[in-house]
Image 1 (tube, rainbow over the protein chains, first blue to last red):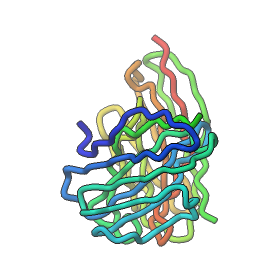
Image 2: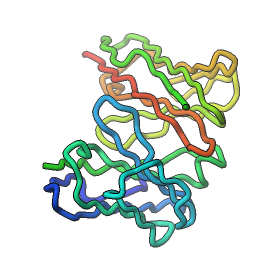
Image 3: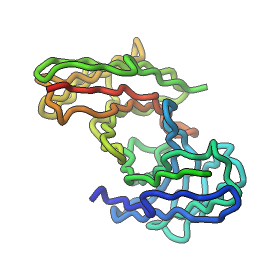
Image 4: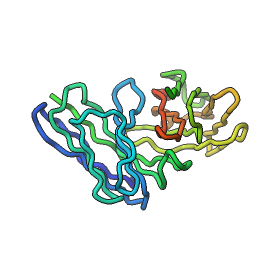
Length: 116
Length: 110
């Protein structure tokens, strides 16, 4: 148990589907993040939320839509994805915003997404 | 643009060997350098380094930072098969948050 729980673990979806990824952190952290990990590429930051407010959108296409209803939950809504969006999507949290403090990220196990 | 470069990208050694993983960084707003271990899914936190020359140690793992030369190393002594993983280095912490390297894929053969 990492303290950050992601569901589902695996997801296969067609290009016309709509699905959502869910993340929940049980650590009492104030900041949450979505990262994308593709094969042979560095982890890419997608979105950052601090106290439920989005503070960073790293030029992510609009087919990815985040939602943070409270400081413990984070969603990533997916629609009309492309095959190149297939990747491991990792949620993370930190005590404070990574940009402001030396606060390590705690990662979830990720959702392995395959777009067909 | 912030950059973190790790080397080697992959490494295969025998159990009992000592390995050194490298990480160089060029970031606009340095706050810390972090090492993570990623086995199957979730990267797990190993070390956070903020000061030059001070070694951090945890069991057989140790790490040190050189802020003048902009690099860090991660040492693993007496390696075990359970050390097989991808080791990620990350730095930054400014407005763009952390920048990650591609990782070093370490395989320990029995």
